[in-house]
Length: 68
Image (tube, one colour):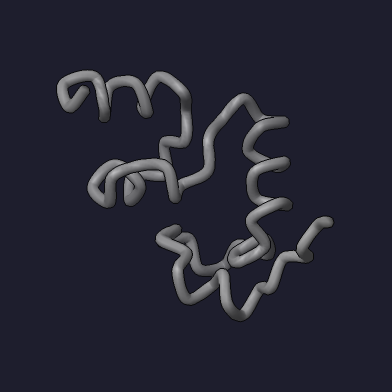
């Protein structure tokens, strides 16, 4: 059984700081968009890295390489 995205509920927890994004709170669309671009969604990054808007896999690895 699948559950539809609930944008108003998701948006309260969304840590993405790009407020003009049409996909904000629509997690399934956000993930699909970033995956198609070879990126990861902002919610997977620590806040200080997320604010740079560098969604690359390389930025993700750099952010967490010293924390694992």
